[in-house]
Each structure stands twice: as C-alpha cells, then as structure tokens.
Image 1: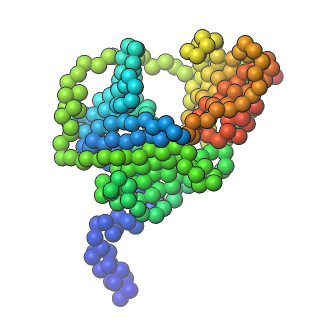
Image 2 (image 1 turned 90 degrees about the vertical axis):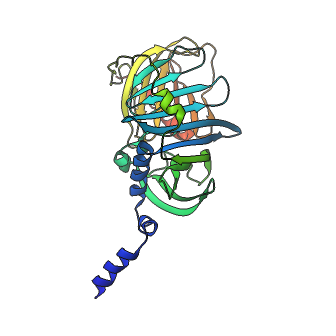
Length: 313
C-alpha cells in the first residue's frame, strides 16, 4: 500500500514540483543543455567594486548551426561571435581573428556550459534557496570550494528555462566579490534576426593550433591549490613593458591562474597585490626575478603561489 501511494504521488506531481526535487548537479547539467539549445536574447552587467560592464548576449540554433553573440557595450566595444566550434573576436584597433573552441571566453566560466564533473574534486554542489532574480523565479546553486584557497561560485538559475540569471564569486566570509546580473531575458521560438544575419557572414580562418609546451621549463612552481593543473606554458613578450617572460597557465576547471616570471623590472619595488572584484594581481620580487600571479583567487593564495616559484636545482 505504501508503494502504491508513492507511485500515485509521483503521477500527480506537476512538472515544476518534480523539477524542484532535482539535485544541484542536475540543475547545472540542465543549464548547460538549455544554453546550448534555447533561443534567447539577454542583457547583463558585471559588477566589480564600483565598476560596471554591460553586455548583450544572444544565442540561437539556425540551419543546424549553434550561433552565439556576446557584445561589450561600453567603450569602443568588443564583439565575440561563435558559430558552432569557431569563435571570432572583434577588438578595437585590432585585426579580427578566429579560434577553434566550443565556448566564448567571456565573463561566465566556460565549464558551466559543458561537463561539470571535472569540478567535483575541488568543489561541492549545494542546492540553495529559491528567490526572484530580474522578476523571474530562481533557484540558487552554490559551487562551494572544498578549501579556503579558492573562492566559491554561486549561480541563480531560472526555474522555467534553466538559464542563468545571476552569478557571483563569494569569499569564505560569504561576501560577494564580483557579480553578474541579468536585467533582461527573452526566450523565443526562433533565433534573433541578428543571429540569422550573422550566420551569413564571412569570418577569418581559424588560427592554427599551437602545441603548448606543457612543462615548467626554467621554473618550478612549488605550490598550487588543490585541483590545479598546468594547461600550457610558453615564453613571450608582455604588452605592458615589452619584457620577455615565461608564462604558465593553470586551471582547476572553474578558475584560471596565470603565472609570469621575468627579470626584475627597473627600480626595486616591494611585493604587493592589487584587486578588482574577484581578480587578484600579486607581484613578488624574489631578488633575481619577479613573479606575477593573476587570477580569481584570494590574495593569500596568489602570494603563496608566487613565493613558491624557484629555479629547479
């Protein structure tokens, strides 16, 4: 009798009631699917300290092609266009270029649009409270760091469409360091006209893939937070000062951290940090060389990484 009651209860539950029983990971998986399959136009702002960056975000599927357009609306403008697995960047005073990738490199972590299983080593997925964001019912999902060396990342998803409504980097004290907030979301049956027009454009040929030198070469990074792995390394000149630097890119799937090692800059400067929203820049003067660490990580974490860099014995 008990089992019959449970079965009948499941039958009479509305779809929204059944959906509300989904786990945090199921919510995130549903968001990744919705972003790939739905036609929508959204506006959002990224808030860092007192600075605000407004964006327009369009996505659609037309003639079996996935189309996406992300535009920074302030300043001279920045436009990022994706057609299936090719992304083209249009930057002010620069020649447009294309790369082969399945996601735009923008203010939303790319892993949220794909398989988040890789994050389980370093993060817990926690179901939060329901609320309203931009006038729409929302479900909070907390991607909680398992240690204090990283920030957590919270997302609020539209309960009707599973699309992202808001996200925030959150420190260990529960403070929001950087937020992304939608102000407008329009989900449609057909893709926006601008996307259909965009699909007819001619784009630059994708740049050839360059084999990454995935080793630490002349330097040894002695400490990294849990889950971080080397993605690539190379040696190139920095745009800021035209100095040659060894470059290393690490990631735990959600957060990228860049490490630059170069000869000391002119003038002896003390080690120190700068922060903007969740982003930390920490420069460590090691005497014979300088180390710069950049990423959405706490200052102490960046400091620990920078101070662990040394030449291999």
